[in-house]
Image (cartoon, rainbow, N blue to C red; front, side):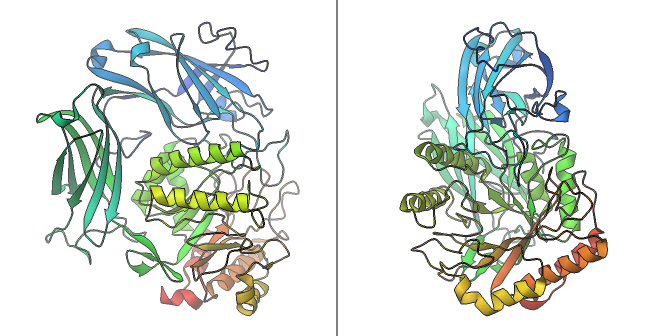
Length: 597
């Protein structure tokens, strides 16, 4: 897209004047939690060096110590150009730091943020000085199972499908010079039937009188102007709509270019803020026109049934864990998932680097966006989750690749949701909270089982014999979609008091096949000994799912091995275990129910 800048961390609101603060920082453990009392933010202790944004647990950090440390400190110097700052503000951004982050600039407190997965920012204009400045960051983390932690372990050793913890800064740190009066956020909602884009601008106007300001949006497609719109700013936010119909654009059914995995058409859009006709702020972005909705047992993309061939993607790398080693590594993962014949992925228990979502937008990869889970239910857990999930949904709302929100998984953190009304109320609240922020996308509240209210019903089934799997659903369909146990004596599809209401059904976890070449690792079911045995089993279970007339998609576990879990189609180094064209042929073979899609 026209706004694209390599390594720019916020691809949907791009400005020119920015600085990447990744690289070598000073680092110290603070196991006795003395740093604030001893004012380390003024006199950083002699310690180690770390490569930000890699956490101390990883090889790429330069430290690679996997034991838990609840309090860690970071320090670095950075320069500010007062000439560039004249009439502007200086913003400091953290794409992700886990869990409680406190920031000081030149010994003065700048602010704090709770939560490990969403972007947060500080305006440090009043704290910086010309030339060299001192930045100190303290991050507090723990093994507390009440905080959203995803796949991070809460014991000294990794176990099951939980891996080495991620402590501290794990995404890009950066800064930008912005105007005093600026666009802070734009919410873009495609209205495909009406052929228009709905916009909500949020503006930081400081001391300005809003009546003196105007916002403008200019849309183009492949370099050709489509339309522009401007609206007077009467408060710190304004709603407007821009018409996209263009008879000469080679229009589709709704008179606009639509986004899909087969043809991921994207529009460029430029945002401007004007004071009495003079531009005071501008930023580049992009969007897509696509509609995702539920129609009885089907999921429709742009009005047509969508059969989803998804793969579970946990987003781990061998030497950097949750942090992608580079932007190129993100692109490589998307390309290899496409090479395997999948049209989408379920980003599991992680809010990925936003550059990943950019490339999914560009390359036409469908994404289910999932929240990292907590593992104990309490008032504290409820409030932390709701706050962080709100940040995540707002941050990633504009990405067309995201077609489903999945806030909860397998009753993690809501272990008694089957029978307890307080936990059921929580799931309903999160469903409606998500819908209040995004009324268009489907929401799966508790992926896998024990659903309460949900737009899609999802089932997890790691049966290793295709014939057994297919017969189970063919013979017991009505019983499966009740509060009775549906397979292997594990969990029922619904919590008590809830029932199936004709929603689409997807097998959102299955497979998990591991090779018998690593006794220390595990997969689901028996391990296989040869590639031929793997292909036979993969083909049988995938074909069985595709033969189910009631099911409109699947999600295979998983893309890559992750630490002790060795059931990926690739190893942790992104090497295919089986030729991708073989997997692709099985995924794309049109059989059973999928013939109609």
